[in-house]
Length: 203
Image 1 (cartoon, rainbow, N blue to C red):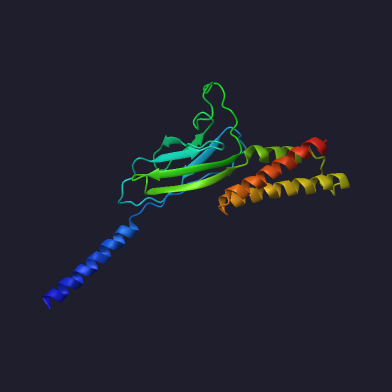
Image 2: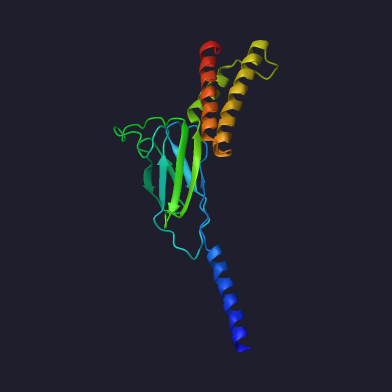
């Protein structure tokens, strides 16, 4: 009877340890809000950290469009940071004077804490700031008022709405559908149509 009771208690203790182990995990996550500032990339920490586990060696690894290797940035939990071309390794000179615009495209962003090879989260972020700003500037150029637009303006509005749909679809493909190549194809197509509109239609 004593052996059976001991075995039962041991099993319950093991189950309890397994529950504690499963519950004590960091849930890492980031937020990358869209911005109309073509020179900055903002991201902040939205992770849920296990209170009984240490949070050490926080590291962001960001691979910019056209690059194969990431830039590593040491950070503390709860961070809210703004990065520019210099901090991303895209600009090497005149960093104290003016930063260069950040290119549109896919930024691969990895956030990890110790042990960093096991505790991490990774995102494909499609930046469309320059493309979207150009779209809004062209939209502002239209002669519109609080009444029904003329046929010419309607035609331009339809084209701009279609272009914006391609931009939104590109972002959805990359960030929600996990199809980076398909998303980039949509973005490039949207940029081509936007450039053609700016050349042929805007007036």
